[in-house]
Amino acid sequence: MKDWHLVAAHDMMRVFGEPQALLTHGSGCTVWDEDGREYLDFLGGIAVNALGHAHPALVEAIATQAATLIHVSNFFVTAPQLELAARLKRLAGAGDAGRVYFANSGAEANEAAFKLARLNSGDGRRTRILALKNSFHGRTMGALALTGKPSIREHFEPMVAGVTHIDVTLEALEAAFDDSVAAIIVEPIQGEAGVRELPAGFLARARDLATEHGALLIVDEIQTGAGRTGSWFAFQDEGILPDAITLAKGIGGGMPIGALVTFGAASDLFTPGQHGSTFSGNPLATAAANAVLAEIEAAGLLENARARGEQLRELVAHIGSPLLGGVRGRGLLLGIELTRPIGPALVAAALDEGLIINAPNPETIRLAPPLIVGDAELAEFDRRFRAALARVAAATSDTFSDSDTTTTIAGTK
Image (tube, rainbow, N blue to C red):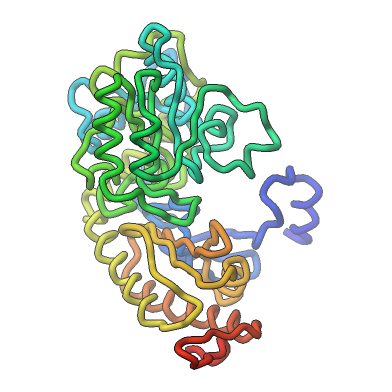
């Protein structure tokens, strides 16, 4: 497409900023733009492309389902929908009492969770929902009210009432809980905050307090679910069961789909007519999600996420640049800490080197490559990331001092 920059600027709503490229096709962990230039994708569509691009299992599932049923409305059920509901219950450990509501996105899954929390009112005694500062739960009005980032809420205030945002500390958690709390919603790893894990014991204590006060523990697994952290869901590493989890992103491998999975008594809160969506349980989306989750299981991609995540940590540690700090996160959801606010510049330099990464804030680089990533891709990431880092270092005049020894950034490897 000629002059696509102008077309995008003229015809597209200005909510995403200027597009970085016009991508035309992909395969595995690689995508290509209109000029045939290749990019190594280490963002995976922001933790969406679990199987990479054009994976045969996903392509076949979508093509087969498209040739039979694409949409039937929520007056009916289809085999892919029923199969996916049972699969998600099994993988999450929800048991026979669990139930699944299908949405079209993560924000919509969290909207359903918000309603679920409202239904847990205890005959009007429980009116508050706890959420965490610096959290991100989506852009729709209910999900935005749950989101703990004032900068993206302020233009749309007043927010939906009843949400209290607390510091991400055990002390704040203890102080906030009482019998007026209907639910608490947490991300086990705050992706948009720079891939930050909760304090040790936080999720377990939230479980105890929610049980004590009759509240729901809702875990937002939209970015961490579907094997991204090396477990099916990040909450499973904490040895607890929530009352509900919200899902999207990786479960569809690129097809838009979200879900609310409930556990135990929370499964009985919704009654017919209290929520819904025209596209809920869409057969094309659910068929795609079944293929993605089946392939993750059959191909051992949970184990791969754990192993490759450790390799990525080691690669970054061996770069040895004063621009880089530690690495946060689990599995293949990692945040590289930067010692200077160079995130946007490093992302741009990486793109010039043919590497797609992301900076959720100026001090962090986020990595979320496809779960199929292997040795060859890791080696290529190392080469391209080093080259991008060298370009940023050469473009700055900052210096670092360590025990009276000053090291120029441009002199780092």
